[in-house]
Image 1 (tube, rainbow, N blue to C red):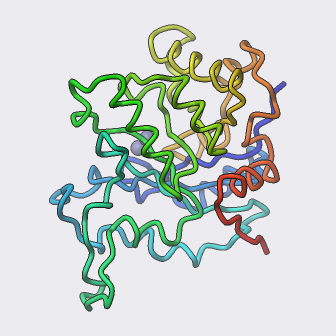
Image 2 (tube, helix red, strand yellow):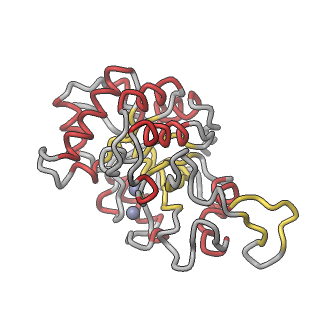
Length: 276
Ligand SMILES: [Zn+2]
Ligand SMILES: [Zn+2]
């Protein structure tokens, strides 16, 4: 049986269409036997009406700027601070990178203006880059959508490409997986993408093809739930069954243990946190 002891893509109430608190997710992670939980709420203009690609208010995103108060270990579970940022352009730029923030959450002026993205991810251990809005990719060539994922992978804080098998934007799988392997970054195999497919259909086939390419090209994967409610945290039976069916090597599962995941972070050039 493949082992999976980390879940680094989970959502809390902050994501608005998710339903559990941080503590509920931590307790669910403990119950599921996880060694490490990563909370990566949406960093996206889907959350707040009035937000756009050119305009946003840091007050809507303050969830991300105070995460340092989370305990590093809670109920015996190591806790990582993440964000799931939307990929928003064909060159792989992420939501908030083109929005300048000049005011703090209390309305004072920042001495140094920085982008909303920089402010939000400064306190994150890692970023998952995912496509949710895909209108910008309408009519794009395969070369362009491939470049989109390569661009996202080149961003320093991006550790994982999220649910590429169900984003609905086709791309050159071998090229993107090969680049992720070279950069020591991770491709996500997402339980939520697979659980309702019954082992058939386009999304299943696409996720399976991506996993096969990872096995062949030596790219590590992150097996995550994408849980939007605490009872889903840490439970990835469908993803693991698919991976077992293709004899996916355990050593390429970066989420197999906390130790393996933290080593993967370091290999990707990210600072692994110190756990008290
Ligand atoms: Zn969501
Ligand atoms: Zn997502």
